[in-house]
Image (cartoon, rainbow, N blue to C red; front, top):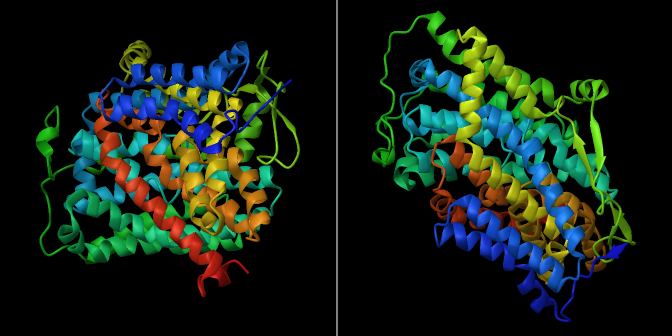
Length: 547
C-alpha cells in the first residue's frame, strides 16, 4: 500500500508548481510550439511519470500501471466513440448525403448563425444528454463541416456550445457520481446544479454566436438566440429541481430544437447571413446547395443521424446498459495498482484505498451503439458488407493518431490522479479563505481540463469540496454543485475534446489553433460561474437559492 502525499516538497505553492509541470508541458507543446498532438501527449505523459515518481515518490511500476490503465480507458469508451462516429460520418459523406442535409437545414433557416445555433447548441445538447463522453462534439463538428463551416469554426464553436449541458450529460452521470462520492442528497445536488447552470443555458447561445460573428451580427438574431436559450433553460431548471438529473438534457434539447424550428417559421433576420466568415480556411469546397429534394431524399439524408440519435439514447438508458452488461462485461483489476494507492485526508474524510478496475463493457459502451447505428445506416444507404469492412479499416487508419493521442491524454490524467498531484492543485486553491466559492468553482474547471470529464472531476474533487465547505461554514451542497457547474466550462479546453474535434473536422495537427481559439472563452465563462457561486454564498438575493 502506497499513501498519497499532497505536499511532497514542504511548500504547497512549490508542490503545486511541480504538479503543474505535465499540464504546462502538454498545453505549451500544443498551443505555443504547435507540436503534433500525439507527440505533445507523449511529452506530457513523460513529464507526468517523472513528477509522480521523482517528486511524489510513487513507485515506478505503479505509475506505469496507472498510465496503462488510463490509456486503456482512453480507447474504451472515448476512442471507441470517436472511431465509430467518424465511420458513420464517412459512410454518409461518400454517398453525398451532406449536400441534401445542408439543404434541409437551410429550409429551417438559410442564416449561418441560426444553423450554428440549431446544430451546435440545441442538437448537440441532445447527444450530450444521451451519451456525453465526446459524442456531441464529434457529431456536431462533423455536421458543421458538412454544412460548409471551416475547420476552426466547426471545432471551436462546437466546443463552446457543449458547455451548459455537460453537468447533466450521459443521463445525469456527473451529478449521480457527485452524490455517490460526497454522500450528499442527489436531488438537492441536482437542484443546485440546475440553478447554477440555468442562467448559462441562456448566456452560452449568445456567447456562441458572438464568438462566431461578433457582437453586432449577434444582436441581429437575438430573438432566435433567446428562444433557443430560454426554451432550454426552463426545462433544464424545472426537471433538475423537480424530477432529478437523468432526463434534464434530453428533454431540454428536444424542447429547444422544436421551439427554435417553430419560431423560425414565423421570424427571420432582416439581413440573413448566408456566407460563412473565413470560409476560405476550408481545405475542401463546401457542398453545393439545391432547393429541390424529394421527401425520400430528405429522409435518406437524415436517416443516419436519426438512427444515431435513437441508438445513442437507447444505449444511454440504465435499463439497456444493465441488460447488455448482463449478457457480458469483463472486469479486470489492474495488477499492481488496484487498492494499492491510498487517498489521504483532507481530500477524503479518512484514508481510502483507490480502486483500479478496467470495465470491458464493450456491449453497453456508447461507441458500440454508434457502431450499430453506422452499420444499419450503411446497409440502408446501399453499402455491401465488404464495403463496410473496407470503410471501417480506412477509418481506423484515418484516426490512428487521434486514438493514440486520446489514450496518452487519459494516461496523463490517470497518472496525476493516482499520484495525487492533481489533488495538490485542488488543495492549493482550497486555501483561498473567503474567496473559496470562486476558487472552488475554478477547482471544478481545472478538474475537467485535466481529466476531460465532469464525472471524473466530481469524483476527484467532490470530497474536497464538501470538507472545505464545512470547514469554512459554507453549504456543502453549494460547493459540490459548483465543482460540477464550474467544470462544464473546462470541457472545451480539455485535450481529449480538442482532439475529438480536430479529428471530426479532418483538421488533425491543428489542435494548437483550436486551443487558442477556445481558451479565453473557457476561462471567462468559468469566472462568471465562480462569481455566481460567490453571490450564492454571500449576497442577497442569490443566497436565498442556497437555503
